[in-house]
Image (cartoon, rainbow, N blue to C red; front, side):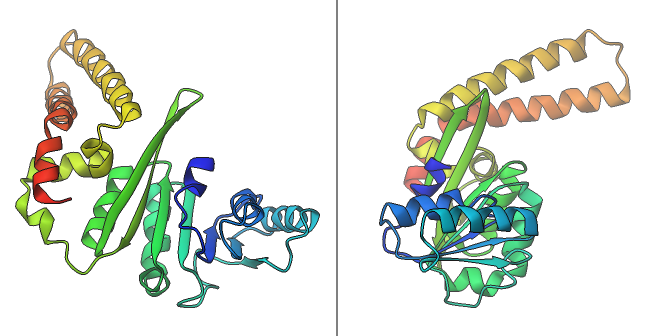
Length: 240
């Protein structure tokens, strides 16, 4: 959560969706990074815990809580920064779609999907946002990518890139690739080893239509994995 919090622009009013214990808004307000925040959650239990922590820190006047399904209880222009973290990618996309007006009125979105990360990046790209910052951390053997995006009226830079490079960017993150992020490099190596091991197992089995289809899928995934290393120049040249 520290890495997610570090992406919030100083001075912005924050809305933390799925706030759980409220740790992120509390830390940012306590550190005087932001003046105030709205902490929302769809469940009463987590919101009550967040309220308890906010009261214990004496921050009731600077952090408010709302029971809300996504951004339903947030008005346009109420938040400069919106964090949606720690949930599945499909749910992230649902919240972004249902709260589109609120998101478009914000200055930035900080997203940390736990699954289907490529689908979230694809949605962001097609919905008229630009990823301007990315990070990936390795914690307890798991990789957590996160990114900050801003509304963008001109996404034509993507038109200069071939389909493979666009897919690679959705899978692994355009800014992570462009910057040669060291944690991404570890992730790519680990993924390559896993895919190679799966391929060996598949080739040891008796061939069938389903096995051949799976081999084709793994070959495609390995090609994208390998292309990530050679995409850096294409991304820079395209101005992403």
